[in-house]
Every structure is written in C-alpha cells, then in structure tokens.
Amino acid sequence: MRFMSLIRINEDNVPEGGPDERLMEEMGTLIEEMSKAGVLLDTAGLRHTSEGTRLHWDHGKLSVVDGPFTESKEFIGGYAIIQAKSKEEAVEWTKRFLQIHGDAWEITCELRQVEEAPELS
Amino acid sequence: MWRIESARVIAGVARIVRDIGVAEELAQDALVAALEQWPVAGVPDNPGAWLTATAKHRAIDLVRRKEVFARKLRELGHTLEEDGAYEPDFAAAEAAADGDIEDDLLRLVFTACHPVLSTEARVALTLRLLGGLTTPEIARAFLVPEATVAQRIVRAKRTLAKADVPFEQPHGPERVERLSSVLEVIYLVFNEGYSATAGDDWMRPALCEDALRLARVLAGLMPKEPEAHGLAALLEIQASRSAARTGPDGQPVLLADQDRRRWDQLLIRRGFAALARAEAAGGPPGPYTLQAAIAACHAHALHSRDTDWRRIAELYAALARRTPTPVVELNRAVAVTMAYGPREGLALVDRLIDEPALRGYHLLPSVRGDLLERLGRHAEAREEFLRAASLTRNERERALLVERAARASLAAKGR
Image 1 (tube, one colour):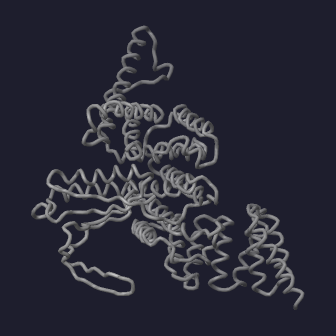
Image 2: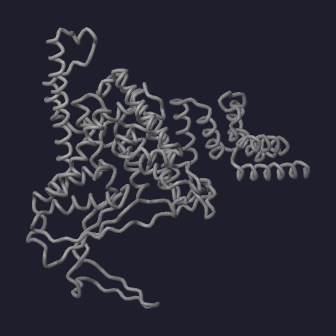
C-alpha cells in the first residue's frame, strides 16, 4: 500500500534560516536509506506559499487567487510518497523523518493512504 | 518497526555466527527483549541500532560459550578438529561485529538464494529473512499450508548448515551465476503476485510489492550491477500496469486493450530511471535489462498504435541471442508481425512447430492461427484456434478461441 505524507508547517514556528546543515545532512542520509529500502517513491519540498496560486471552483464559477494567503498560518511544506507493507510501517518511517528535526521544529505529518486500483478482491 | 529492521539485524548477526538459522533466532530474541524492555525503559532513540547491538551481543556470547565448551572438551582429551566439528574463532567473531551492513545484507541475499536450495526454499527464505514476511503470510500468499512453509524454511536452514555454505558474497565467475539465482527468485515472487486472480487472498497481489521492494533494495546494494537495475526497471514498469490489466469483472485485459491513462506514471518514471541506470552501468544488456527495455517501449506509447514495434522486434532478437528459448522466439515472432507483417511473423512461428518445449503450449497455435487468419488462410486458422482451445486451461480464453475458430470457418466457406 502507498501513503502520502503531507508535511504541514506553521509559519510562526519555522526556525530562523530554515533547516540547518545538520538537518540537511541527516535528511539526505534518511532519504537515501528509505530509497534503498524501496520505501520512498517520491519526495520533495514545496516553495513558499507566497509564490503559490489557488484556483477555486465554486459551482461553475472559477476564481484564481495568487499567494500569499493570509488567512492561515499553516502551509504544506512538502510531501513524501511511501510504499509500505502496513500503516504501522508508514508511521514508523514518518516518525524517523520527524525525529531528525530535533527540538527546534514543530511539524505535523498527515499520513493518508493513497487510493489505488481496487485490489483483486 | 520489525519489518524495517529485521533483515539488517539478521544480516549483522549472521556475519558473526555464520549460520542464518541461528542468526534469525538471535534476532528474534533481541526483539523479545525489546518488547519487554521498551515499554518500561522507553523506546531508544535509534531502535534499529539497539536491536542490532543486542542481537550481536548475544551472538558474541554464544560464540564465546562455544569456545569455552570446545576448550573444556579439548581438556578432556577430545580433539574436535579431528571430527571436523565447529571450531569457533572468537577474535574473528568480534572483528566481524563491526562490519559494513550493506555487505552483510548482500551476504544474506546470496545465502538465502543459494543454489543448494530448491526454488521454493529460496523463495520462502528470501521473503522471510529479507522481505520480513512471517511464515503464515508466505503460506497465504502461495496458497500452501503454513506447515509446508515452516518445514521448507527449517529444511532450508538445515541444508545450508549441512552443506557448510559460507556466509559470503560469491566472487568471480560464480558471482554471475549466483546473481542470476537471486534475480530469478525476486522475479518469481513478482510473477506469483502478478498471476493472482479475482477472489484470491490479498496477500497474493501484495507479493508484487514485496518483490518490487526487494528489487529496489538489491539495486541499492549493487549499484554497479546492470542486471539488478534491469530487474528493478522491469518490475516497476510491469507493476505500473496493475490497475489497467483487469477489467471490471476481474477478467484480464490484454496490453493492447488496456486503458493506458490508468498506468501508474510514478512507477513508469521510476522504471525509466532504473533502466537508464542499467544501461549506464555498461556492458551488453542482460535479459532483465532487455525485457525492461521492451516494457519501456510499451510504456512510452500513449496509444497501442504508437508502439515502436521495430525497436521491440530488435530487442527481442537481442533477447533471443542471450536466452534462446522458444517462448522468447514466439514473442519475437509477434513483434516481427506487428513491425513487418504476418508473413514475416509466420516464417518465425513455423520454425517453432516441432519445438518440444512448446508442445501443449496454447499460445503457439493461438498465435499461428491469428497469423494464418490475417493471411487469409482461414481453414488452417480454424484448425489452429481449435487446437489452442483444447490446450488452454482458462475457460474464458477457451470460449474466445472457439468463437474465433467458428468465425474462421465461416470465412473459409464464404470464399
């Protein structure tokens, strides 16, 4: 089964200067380990919401709004697509991702199973 | 957690005790210790390292006890060496405790897929030791009783111990042969999952994911081995078609008829990347890389009419030179037909008619019937469809072939 981890970050709780060298290094190691374990299918960080655009469909009416979006402090900072044998396994990998961030960060990873073609059942 | 760490723990311990059966037991002991201690003392920062350290500690203890035991026996006047009995090397064991984990994992892969073992045993051992599957899970996936799998695993471990199979990576010419055994085991697991049909336990299709993961792990462990990347590429691309290969009623959908919008683009992209790595690793492409290249040709075609059949025919020709089997030849004939026409295809198929390996293989008359039909030789086509119908074990396919025979018969009379 496949899971998407939506990495949510609160604007007010990002350490100054973003990720430091140590975090980048450990992140690289973890990404390599997860790729080699055949678990990590894809991952990326997303650029700041101020560069983003929201397209909204409201019963036939289209509206387009460019960032920044002031109404919410929380934004999706990145994602990871994980192939795991069970939800528990996906949770375990996600824990490891969070733990390397140390005490300076506050992050929420929302794990969602990817809807795949109905299994042969 | 166990599924993530088990292979690494077992591999690390096996290097010390040189016996994968003992290694698995020690690894499980460490897990039991973890289940007892963690709820009380808290989960350590690095659970994997904790498990490995604990299991290795026990392994060194075990080797040390055996050493003491052997010395006592010697003192009693026994000479173990003469019996060829176990001669532990404590210094070596301790030196081995700090080995390179990737090297250990490779040793584990090669040992689990050792040619002294039957194919079933290799598959069971690989899934258990490297895939982290339990015995009941393997049994469910392969539709065999749990006791059968348990026995296969016990026997396999015994065979390895008895044959004194060293816990080593093979080198030189032996390595090529041993690697092909490893790749074959993974491919077999994938195909077992791929052949799952409607109503099967979900553990069966899940074998595709297990195999895919193992293939990725192997490619990561042997980045310079083109065929490891080739196999990974082949499985990624084949797996990308999963959603499209069965219809709403569970009936199989042929490649040409699949809704290609349902192919998994993420897996296709990963397959292309793995294929590029296989090709970049150099040397003439091996059978898995060639099959991956063929699969990639299909993946590149947004519609089946856009398929580059000339390229596929070339790749099949190369594959036939590498692995000259009748089934490959038959596939080549189909590709040649698509690229150059039925006359050219039929010339190849006709050479296979007396092939003993294809006797009883329904696809030979089925393909031949199709070619004859296209060439307007309806009466002969009818004969071939009927023969194919009598050979297939798939009811749906049989009905289809009988129908084609009837149509060919009508066409023959209409002339």
